[in-house]
Length: 623
Image (cartoon, rainbow, N blue to C red; front, side, top):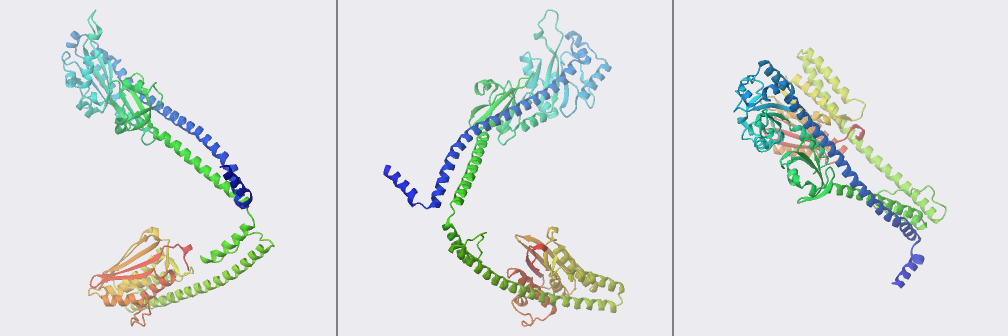
């Protein structure tokens, strides 16, 4: 082992290249101390993150418990206000003998109904009901109004769970979850109620706790504010909060499914969780979770809040990833600095060699160096840069000549279409003039003027798609003036395509071909032309369809063949076909062979022409 280290040290000292030696030295001196320091920082920060997360959840849960206490206080305030009212005192704080013969005064009843109506807001307090002892009292239901059925006999709820609790226990008040209520109560008023027991005045010397109830005052309230408070307490995914009472009945929960998974009976809180209002790690069948319980003041309710431990560990894992990324970034920076410090003559030679090798995959590029030096390597670098500039100048000249030739061919094809359309339009205007349709002549001249104003604009050979659609609509308008509106032209192109560019006079020759050779060859001389468009990946596709006579297969093959040759040579010198041919050829000259026109047709049904162009805006257009 000793000899091995000697050989390694000798290799490092005498045989290792200087650049590699410097890189290793800097890496060891910088990275080893920072690795130890980063580990220490991570351990400290991990503990801080865990403590902060638990403290934050504890504060949020305490705030939620306080909100629930405020909601309950509002309900108990309503109940106390009713119990302390003079009407309730006069009605139910009686002896049994007085109650049997008691006939309430109408003005007191009106006052009581007015009070209950004012306390019922239908937002928090959903209803108030007084269940009187119908075995003693006369019928009080006769005082109910159509909008407020305040009185009900206690016999109507004798089967409810809350009535059974009052019958067996000596409690005076009871907060009732949905389980305690009868189906009719839950259906009419909601899931929660606060019920107070009012007893008869006991005979002198008797036990107060054995006195029978004269009535039960039930204040029903909305469960949604409690649900919302618990849901707001769950700030992260998988977190849950729920309320149970001392009898282990679920009152409300942010998520019933999670509440069932993380359920703990009330009598096991201290043994499993520990002191109240403090989060502790508790083991559950579905995984560990930090759990705390908060007693709700003046009730037998408890709010249980829990946070899966994975949330805390995930935060720690995220912190660890961030530290590792920072450490790796620091490592990369340290290695980069070490490499820069080890620059030598070998680096200059390698740089020239790599630059020369790049010629295999593209244009030669000059060396980017502020100062090449006066030694042999500097002379080599200067000579290479001179050679690169000469080669690039020659290639640029060749590319410019090729591009100029392509644009010249494109403009020549464009020039063939402009006169062709003008001849046809002037012929139509002449025909309108001969038939004496002066207003139509004026309209046609104005339309033609607008058309050529757009066509002959000085913005090159491209239009926006919006302008090109306007061109086509102007053409259709002119033709319909001549043929008595025999063709319906419908455009369905999304507005988002409006600002993309297209060569001028792309749609018009195809629409003209559909009109003259598709629809006008039909017996009824009328039909429809539909122009639709859509974005397809990096391209734009248009579809121009008509319901004309269609094109026979042999003729369709001839039209498609024109895209690869001269239509004159194919015996199809028809001016409209020249326009279609030129349109296809222009698109291929401008954008390449993967773009242009394609035809589909069914004789007797119609023809579809597909136009495919790249999606380019005006600033990206080649002309």
